[in-house]
Image 1: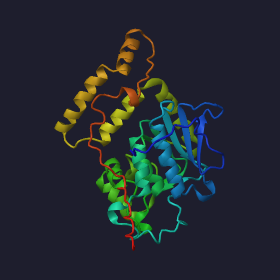
Image 2 (image 1 turned 60 degrees about the vertical axis):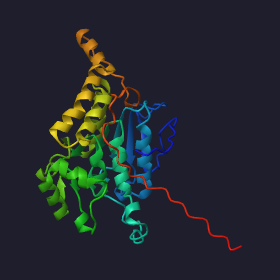
Image 3 (image 1 turned 180 degrees about the vertical axis):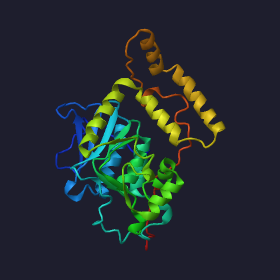
Image 4 (image 1 turned 120 degrees about the vertical axis):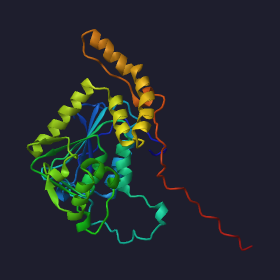
Length: 315
């Protein structure tokens, strides 16, 4: 995650006309609520995503990562037709080729996916309709994905002359398997949420688009009440930051587990269990994470700073 200075805002709520609409839940609250709902808000354009929208989302995820007031994020789309039709094709990309050296190129969708992956708060993606392209790829880094049975989803890159983005060459085959991933990419077609080729992407499939957001809110509320959100984050990172072998996983898992055994949330669970009451979890990644967190060797994706040499004086 970027080391840039981040200012925690008094509120995340945006104006109703914002292309990235952020609301409290419930929306009547004047204070930052534990559940923040982020909506792709271009329904007339089927929530096609622009560069500005990507930058706004990146900044949001990087900020709530550090904000202990926020516990769960729900990402959805406006309208009843689409979560996102993908990237806004009206953007001029003709000058992107050869504009900077290859080693300095960074796909903004990939930066968005990484900001979602790194975020210490669970991200529930509530697809309210059709989702293709970056509408799918960038959200594979979320924690939980919920889709309506009536919507279609796809990875149409081969049909528009592009390659995968948003780190999806990492996420997609690990979710659906290599055979299904290559099938999805080779055909470039759209498929219903319950198609076998998409199995592994959606944790839940609900009957209609209108059912998605209420279910996401229900799930977020349950998580607020019943789970250790720090444990959710650590377990998710264990899955994606796995060192690659059972032996290495054992070496990573063990010190984490031992610190968690003596951690605030597990001790609270035990006290609640024996006291015959519901636990109240409060541990934060920012202050209570195990000593070995983060256990992986971070790969810097920041673009190296450059400076122009001053012109030589002619005097």
